[in-house]
Length: 188
Image (cartoon, rainbow, N blue to C red; front, side, top):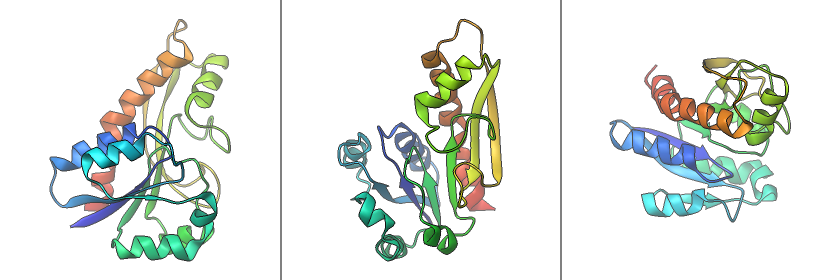
C-alpha cells in the first residue's frame, strides 16, 4: 500500500476528485490531508470522506521537524500539492526529493511563479490573448513552479471565453488527469 499526503489551502475540489479516484483503485491510500487555512472548504470534505486532516499554521508548517515527523508517522510515499499556496520548506524538499508534486493551472513555464495561482493565472492568460491554456504537473523544487515537468495537457481558448470560462476548462483537465498521473508516479 502506497500512502499519499495531500496539501490543500482552499475548497478541496482536487482533494475530492483524487479521493474518489483512489476509492475505486487499489494499492494507494490518501493517508493525510494538510491545510494551512482554518476555514478551507477542504476541511469539511475530509470530514465527509473520513480522511485524517491536520491544520498547521504557517509557523507550524515552516517548522520542518514538526511536519516531517507527522509525515513519517503516516509512512507517506508521495506529497501532492492540490491547491496549496505556501512555499514548501527546503528541508521538506530535501527529505522528500522527487516525492513532492504540484499541479499548476497553466502551461508552464508561462504564467508561473509567486502569486500566480487560480484566477490570477486565468485572468493573465485572458489578458494576453492566449489561444490555449492548460495544466502542468511538476516536481517541486526550491523555486515556485520551476521543478521538472511530469505532464501537461492543454485546452483551446476562444476569444469569447472569460477568465471564469478558462477556469472551468482547466479544472476539467485537472479532474481528468491529476489522479491518473499520481497513480502512474506511484506505480513506476
